[in-house]
Image 1 (spheres, rainbow, N blue to C red):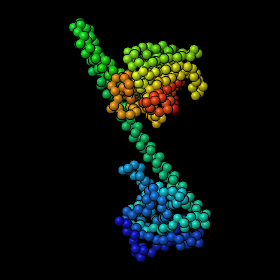
Image 2 (image 1 turned 180 degrees about the vertical axis):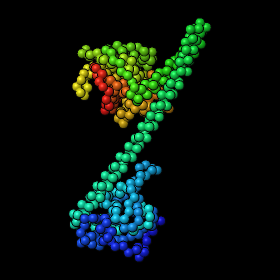
Image 3 (image 1 turned 60 degrees about the vertical axis):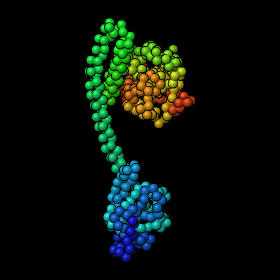
Image 4 (image 1 turned 30 degrees about the horizontal axis):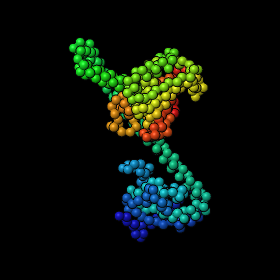
Length: 418
Ligand code: ADP
């Protein structure tokens, strides 16, 4: 319930001395003129003077008491901009802008204020350049204060996020190392089983053991990806360059997926421009990057689709020679809002729970690490990776093109945008 105190209860305030506090450079005749256009009101604690998001027509000068200025930042959270007290002006910004209130102003004690209507405020502004200047100064310094406060809060939040990211990374590193040891033991036992004639001669036991081998290999791959991601984030990924022809590497990778490609009837082609030079790059890292791009192109393309790989010379932003490898698929595509985020670790589009399980089956599950590793490898060589797609569409299948740009000679790693 809002109780507007009876005016007779408002103690006697000298309007001129309050206005003098608020507008330092104003002459007495201007202050008197202003005083005549204001009325004194007293409000109880918790009374809202300005409602965020609402067009209101009053501007306030605080004569006594305090108000809290807050802004909603989410459904259940608000941010306190500041506490204002005697001599402060509030509610002027939205009147100048002809905009709804950008924040809520609520009394935090009983408060006496001088109120001025919008039309009178505008008359005063047009008549008194000094008042206009004063208001401008107050408003600008407030905006600057708000900016500085927001920057300080962002810096604090960033620090917390970086710490959380480091904790997550440490957890991944410990988990990967802890998993690796029992996995190595398991793989050792499986290879012993594989060599036993009793198993070799029994086709159903053979199927069981080959199932365990496949599962253990896949787990090994995921554990290695977890370790790769921690190396990228700790910037401890070492590049050991040697001269590489890319086409044979890609052909070899494709060979590894022959059964999946045949089963899913995916048509894979590879073209290389004749003038494509060899590149100086780390073979195992480049193989990993190309492997992840190829797996994704197959995984996100429905049965019967196509993947076209194209290799050609290119240049980096600094004009040094590079080569570009494009993976163009006829798959489900990707909405623009995900184009940057898919390169962040653990980022996956859509509901992970509905992914199918096979590594190369359509929309098969993954750890959301593949593209983060590709980006880490590209950056470690001084190159970059990005995606082009007009959007996700599982009916029309516009597909995606993943571009990997690698320098002919590794450049010092640098943060690359795009
Ligand atoms: P995941 O293990 O989930 O495949 P990635 O880091 O390799 O992790 O990819 C991140 C996300 O990017 C995937 O979950 C998928 O939504 C999207 N994505 C990657 N490649 C493609 C592609 N060729 N077509 C459509 N979406 C893709």
